[in-house]
Length: 468
Image 1: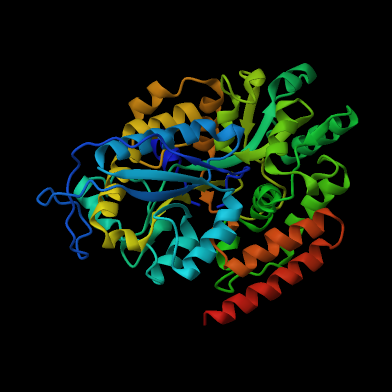
Image 2 (image 1 turned 120 degrees about the horizontal axis):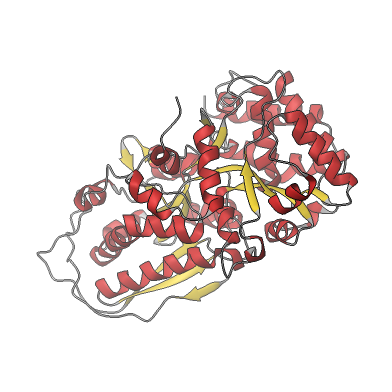
């Protein structure tokens, strides 16, 4: 059944898509003093109390975020505004903002810090499977009492990726979907419209190539970028539910339909549909290829719509960008309208913050100021991030004012189902194998779809055996 506008905007069910960029450290605004709610030291409640005074002695907390790079300044501005409010409410508090590339944070820094027992107090956290792994190891703060006290536990559309044994250990910052952004100005000049069949899409790719343009933006230094499109292709050929079955053994990476998906991606590589040298390009270059007009299509998450706003890198394409879902493939399995949707990117909090009344007060204030209708709408309007909280449909309609976001919503409304990104469904070793090794080897011509599938299945079987 088609989902309503409100549900589609707020219910995004999974990975990868991961948002990436180049990082650096910076400090938040100066601390201001106020009289915040005091905190209850009882670990059993993890709740803020207004009975006992809180010391105003200076203390510092770190927020590890991934809002780095030119195209994430709106997102960073929202975070900085929240930081300013929290510092005003919690006496003595100064936040240190630690900006890190999302892939580096998830796969390197945060893993190492969790193993050593010294993660930042607040940090960018990927939902499934990361939050469950860290919660099982008692590394994350149980947010359930805080959400109940603030009265927002039921305000989120989907907390499943951050829930473990009935308790909530993280909060999604927003939702996203994935599809093709395309240059409407170029398409209009050709007399084209967004393709409605897979054959039309492939003919357009061939014609763009013949026209001397780059059909598809490409930047594969970080494996998650090409895997967005690859994930959608194999979900067309093998079915949107297939990836969820790898960890249970119900499906295999080397199943014939999976190989067809990889083979189609390899075919597009061999036909020169991606920019040459893509293995050396970072995610930022991916965007530049499209905004400069060099590439005509770009497969990306709906968060990319923020680029096409005044003052951003894609400002010159305002009103000239469209969005469409991958059309059905002939002989494909399952729902051919299915689209990747996600609520996996969010914030987590160190379990140690629950042992310090002032840190707990800061966490509560951060959640109160970050997770509300105002900030959710700012994320939507300013940054193109779909809400993760329930918002009245009329309010959403009033706030969606640009044509591109309206088109994105129409695409979401037209899909009958969704599927999570692969990296929220398979074990970390499998994600590493495909993201850091196999997809680059396929792009570089060092492997075949068949060999790639066999290698992935071997790692998958080892990962499955390890948890039996």
